[in-house]
Length: 81
Image 1 (cartoon, helix red, strand yellow):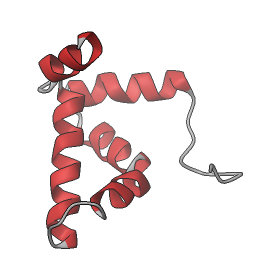
Image 2: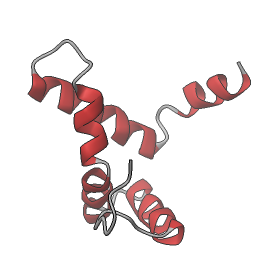
Image 3: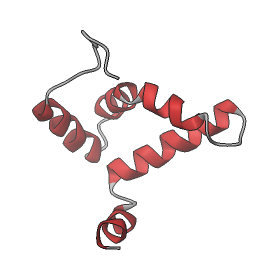
Image 4: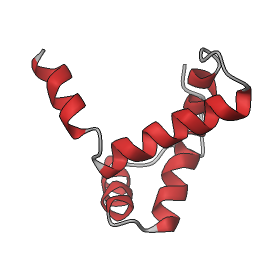
C-alpha cells in the first residue's frame, strides 16, 4: 500500500528523464533511481537466501543492469513467451 505524502513519488515524466540520464550513466540519476526503489529492493532481498548485504547487492545489481538494458533480451522473451 502506498503511503500518503511519500517523498519518493515522482511524476512519470521525471521518472523517464531519470531513466534516460541513468542510461547515459549519469551517477546522480542512477543514485536517485536506486533511492526511489530502495524499499522495494530491501523487500525483495528478504526472499533471497544469502546474507542481507549480499542479497541487497545482488538485487541492486540486477536493477542497474535492467536500467542499462543488459537484460533487454530476457525482458523481450518474457513478453513474448
